[in-house]
Structure formats: structure tokens, C-alpha cells
Length: 194
Image (cartoon, rainbow, N blue to C red; front, side, top):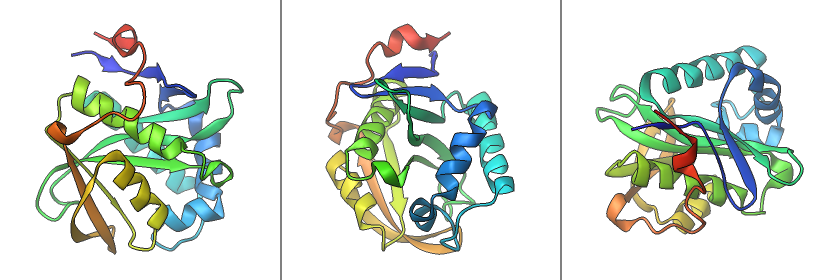
């Protein structure tokens, strides 16, 4: 099956992560409010960490055929955030491999439904195009906004886990329970690379 490297939603364009995204990724990782949800220390992430994350994301696309997209507003081109699907190995996940939904939005765009839109279209790719049976999502217990996004997307709480050395709340959504909230990846087949 082809890769979906770019697509559009009602308000956003999504493009596969690449090295040229460093500046946007670093702005996201330097946003103090975002950093509290992404880093183990709650502090903005240094440039070297962003480089490592980009390197892993680009390699993930090469080896898995899916991964993170960078999202921009369709009307202005403004960077909104990043999101997508990541395959986590059993060592990272306490003994079981997981496909995980990931998203992070610039704090200046919080509360506008972008995380839900990014998450929903990522789930569409995962369930309808890649045909995953289930997708997990997890967040720090204090990140109630992210837990609300997960609930809107149909995820159900499963358990508490330790991820990156910190307690997280783990949620799961099965393919048969997925109900798209937005147009499900407009023109995705036209953008799929064979």
C-alpha cells in the first residue's frame, strides 16, 4: 500500500516530516507551555533533542512507511504543530508493541480544535489506509486537555503506564469503534506514493 506523505483537512495541510522542518519543530519544543507536555523535565527541549527527534521521525518514515506530519493552516501557511502515528517497540512500552497517536500544537493555537483535527485524520490514515486494528494514546496525568482530545476521538482509558520514566495514562481505540469526526483525509489516495 502506498505512503500518504501529504494531505489536506478542512483547515490544515499535512506534510511528512523532513529536515527542513527543524525551525518549526524547535519553535514547538521551545514553547514553554508545550514543553510541559512533552519533556521529562517540563522544560523547553534543547536543539540537539529536536535534531534527534527529527532524525528518528525521518528514519521511522523510511522503515515503517508512516509517521509524523507537520501541520500548517491551509489559508495562511502558518505552522500549527505536528502529529501522526508512531510504532513503539515492546521495550518502550513495557513488553508490547504499540502504534501510538502523537500530536503537539503550538500553545498560541490551543483551544481551537487543531489537536482533534490532526488526531482524527491521523487515525483515519491508521485505520482506513494502514488497517491497524488498534491505536494507543497516552499522556501525563496532569494533561487534562490532551485527555479531552482523546475522549473526543473515541479513545477509552485502559491503564496507567510508565513511559520515558514518568507515569502516563494510557488510552486505546479499536478500529471497529473509530468514528471519523472530520472529512477523512481528503484526496489521500491521490497523494499516496506507490
